[in-house]
Length: 531
Ligand code: AVJ
Image (cartoon, rainbow, N blue to C red; front, top):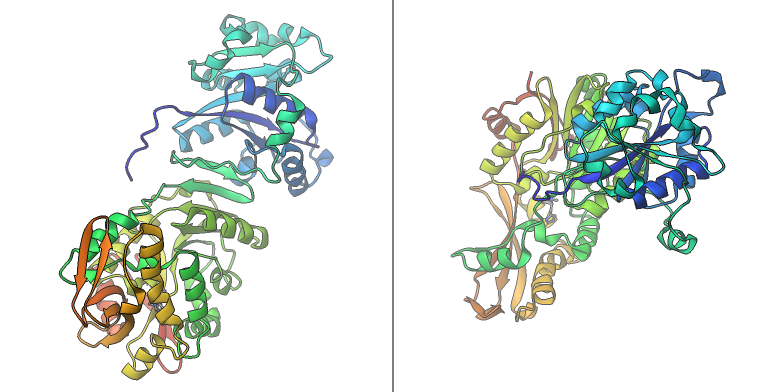
């Protein structure tokens, strides 16, 4: 992962409290802080219980979170259950934990003036003051009596003028500011125009872990999405013209793939589902208790339900995908229905991934999950490298559950990629449409045909676009000519025997623990372990 180029740190205000109930005062302080301190976001840290207060007076935690999200109603206010997830009750510990996982954020502690009154009774309050700059907001109608409090007196020398408040977040603590009036400096029309219905704050330039809506965390590793134009030019320049299958999956391509999975001839998706569901008990028993699941290429997160239901005390589900918007949408949706913490990581599994595992402390071990025979798209070397990286990501004592397509009768294989309705052909041809529409290439799709066959030497289905007659693709002044019958190679879909898969696995830190297949022996699920 290249280090972030951004030199300016993200400025984040932290407003802690029981939010019992959340109210406009919380919102006013947050809006004032955003404006006057020049913050990028305010995180509301909803504490499960204030040790100074009686636990019986608390409303249900989920209710407080939900209500807080409604009251916040602002794109830059994020309601977080971080303290509950980490089992933290003291602000001093929460701050240490947040700084440890977000070294690139500049945190500011926000408080109402009433908080200052008893601040000197907080656990390690001096440590707090030495750890983060603080901003105290007087509430309308209150006098400046908070300034007479014990903590205010002791910290008096570190107080700066509200006129310099913009510098607060970048000033070395201890430092604090007191705003005698917390009138919201934004006009109400300005607030209204910024209202949205949910509060998701995502940083796209920084690698940042933010508490994010219903998600336990969202980690954005800013994956390289590839340069379609450069990759097409490079691929068309090769002796065997080729292009990565990842470019199949624009919106049209993704819809076509969904249709493929429903086709009579396309057995893999339904066979895999049957393998997982029919062996659910054995699979979940072999995984054991308190596994945290990390799904590679989680897409619509549909396949997690095959697994999670039968698992004993699953600890967490972390969805990972390269497509940020789909990931957030699908992971957030699954977070609402799964009874375990759900998080999301935007990344490319062709690069190393480091998980913030300490955010999910109850896990006994990690389980990589890679269904869909996507591993078949990789060359053997790439698959070996991928499995080796995954062992690193998941750590010692991890397991890895992989679904892959098995070698079988050639006619069955070839039919699956040459369906009678021509959906696979349309899926393949969609690439030409994209090259034409998005890159402005000059080409005639009618000069090409879908071509898929089983290459027995390589144990793989190959998909190509084959020229029906001599033709040219013109792109950015380049002319790429095709002889009649010449192909553009668009995809490999490797098939394995169990023996060959195990031989591949043995060249990585993993060992085969168990495997399952359907009666016909068409599709397999393997559980690997690195213990
Ligand atoms: C998603 C890679 C598993 O190889 O069968 C389906 C893609 N290509 N039909 C596969 C695909 C053509 C699919 N994978």
